[in-house]
Image 1 (cartoon, helix red, strand yellow):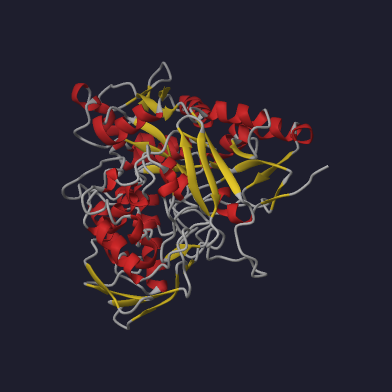
Image 2 (image 1 turned 60 degrees about the vertical axis):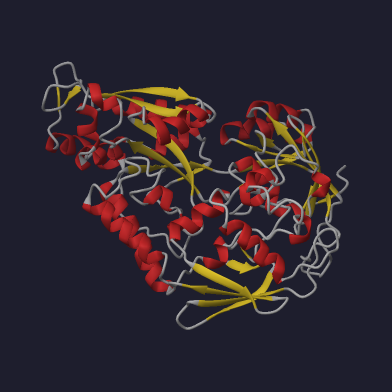
Length: 529
């Protein structure tokens, strides 16, 4: 089940999470990220080779690949998909990746199964930024005359869609759901070489809100649903009567950040520049980090079902995670010295003032769609009172929060959930100074600070460096800089929890990447007494 409607059924035009989720089981790329190990593995390509200078790549398609209508999949389909992708600047999330690495590439078919790529500079990301492959024969009468957004739009006869994934969509009813049927030509098998998927039919229900989705699950209308850790205990109590189990994630790629708006052009600072001065002071940011009690967040907000975060890369990315960054703990009680160093002093009223007599107060923006983050903001606000800071929670809709962060910049501090990519260097929109999601000061024409300039350089090196040890060193330096400058403060992250009906088999573990839907081809329905 998902919340919200798809924008398209064309994977190259996917521009929202709903579309990506619905098409996850319909199309494949040449390579993929293993949802459990996070390793880069072959998908439609059975293998690839790279020249010593890392400029020439050859991908070889699997033998006997077919589309869901039985037509053979060849290198012509790969070239067609690449042409379609390259000639459309609005090609969804995939375009963001190519823009991020500034990749100049030429490609050609060597034979029916081999495609060669020639790069202007090395790019270790190439296998995972190649777009999904589309069927040339299904686009004969449309692709030449239409933009991507017009090809396979949301309101479209889904029976015409041809894919390579385990399931193919058959019907879409807005506000109700999408129905899929089994792809008889799916290329993947299980460990015993049994053809996947096991199931014949699948329906994704669509809801207008998380609450309505969960109500539907409790009425036994859904087979599984993601739940918050706050709801976990009540779901656990009812699991026998509801005939379901609660599955906790072992780890995840999720992050939550407390972010300061340091954008000098932001509207809130036109009338009052004082908060901007505070937020751009590293000592002030570090003081806030020392005030925040992570243990209290894990205990009081998540009942213990949450993971600590001290750096921007989640621990699950073991090759890149660096544990020895600067850490900020409320136990150390360093905040008062830092505030005094930065010119802040409490008055007789126990309220904190800056060196110009301004009372220190600010809002904490948070999306109302995440009740746990609203609670977290309230707890942090109460913790800040201990040093005389007045913070008040400002819950807003997801749309309003997105507009504030990326368009009108009407905010001062915020709590923001962010999913890390298995290759964090691909998230240039977040970490590069010019990025639109560089929340604390986006879209800079030139880096405002020397440390942001250093990060830009690290990201540039990551996009061209193939040596694994060098990449790990670069990620280590990136984490050290962020932990020291602290434009955002990592906060605890709730465990991912799914409630899954007992009749659904092989759904006993949550993948690290892509959620439970990545297990779908292996699900089967069994009898549960």
